[in-house]
Amino acid sequence: MRVVLLGAPGAGKGTQGERLVKKYSFPHISTGEIFRAAIKEGTPLGKQAKEYMDKGALVPDSLVVGIVSERLQQPDCQEGFLLDGFPRTVGQAEALDEVLSGKGTPLNAVISVDADQGELLERLTGRRVCKTCGATYHIRFNQPQVRNVCDKCGGELYQRADDTVETVKQRLDVYCRQTEPLITYYQKKNLLFSVDGSKEIAAVFAEIISKLEGEKPA
Ligand code: AP5
Ligand code: MG
Ligand code: ZN
Image (tube, rainbow, N blue to C red; front, side):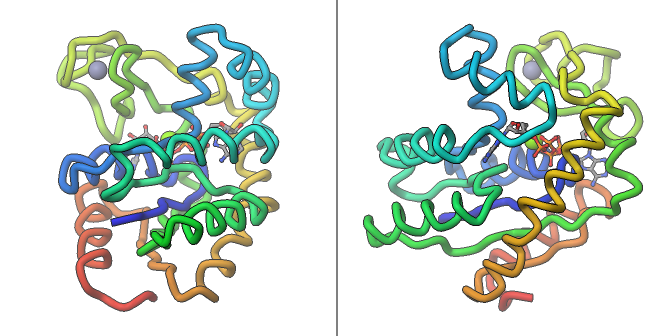
């Protein structure tokens, strides 16, 4: 299955992605994670991406598209994949269509996780992420068993550099202007499934599964 997770910052793409890859055993490709790993390693890509990410702006399409295209050529993507946070512009979506149609493997579904705008700020400023395995938590909505320690690997939790109030506001604005048009883009292609991301994590997951396993786009 070839799936895209679409949604505003904090909508729950990473959280649902973690659960989906466990169920379907396909690779979870998050462009945000790819950039954060590059920043941690201090690579040239990381240095370039950091300039944009710190401001809450999008990394230019010219940088992102090549990375994803290459990633999709890897053997583990041949049976399917989950894209999280890509595409985020119409230009990226068109480039993805081109790559996939060239391989004869078009997308099966785009899941739009619709969240309540008012809650996103609280979700993002309260988010904590594992330094070691990347698992996502929240200080109120999804607490680890031991404060600041990852349930899965025992790693230390940290707060993302772009999860400050100021940067979150910028990211939400960028989402509305540059990414939201993709909802119509995929509706027209009859690929869009909308789910209510304001429900509890488990309920959102159940809705995604039911949409993926048989219902018609809505
Ligand atoms: P990226 O890392 O993709 O960030 P984002 O899109 O802003 O989304 P987030 O990861 O912040 O949110 P999420 O939807 O994954 O929410 P999560 O599940 O963690 O991108 C970062 C930056 O990289 C971008 O700003 C850009 O600069 C650059 N970039 C990346 N991709 C790019 C691209 N394609 N093109 C250009 N630039 C790109 O959940 C959030 C919190 O809420 C967590 O604490 C979680 O526990 C909690 N939570 C989740 N679901 C629920 C729920 N149902 N109820 C209550 N709490 C919940
Ligand atoms: Mg994420
Ligand atoms: Zn961990």
